[in-house]
Image 1 (cartoon, rainbow, N blue to C red):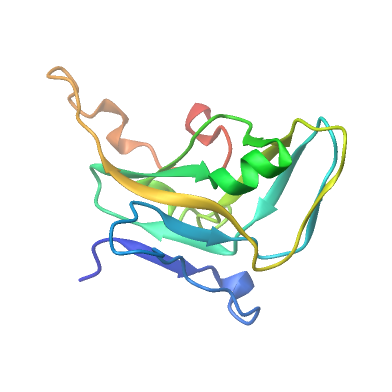
Image 2: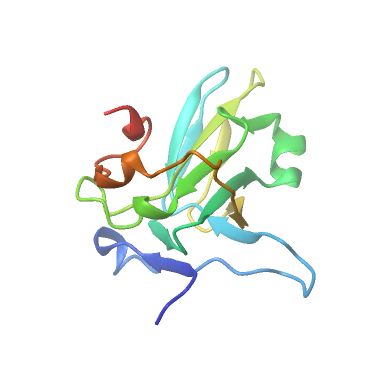
Length: 151
């Protein structure tokens, strides 16, 4: 039984997508690459596809963080600070759980991202629930990506 990891989504199966890896023995994050070329325009949010989905235990989430070197060198950040990929996102009917990175370019220059550039890191986290959480939302089925828990 699979417990935690990454898979390439169907639409990207034949596009030579690399599964994320840790680069050192003590790295917390798994480096995530861009699945396509992208131009990050100044003062704009760009959605950069990864071609990946993540699977994990029901009491975990995947935190998405921009890589620090990329961020500092190019004045980039994730528009929401940290992306949160919930466990039930992986196989939703709308997009198969495709992880898309929302990058904001704070500079006055465009930044080019090339397919295969390491743009983010994924870190798996456990989370806790409050005593009175009886799981009323447990009947909901996730559909969609950004903002899908409001639907």
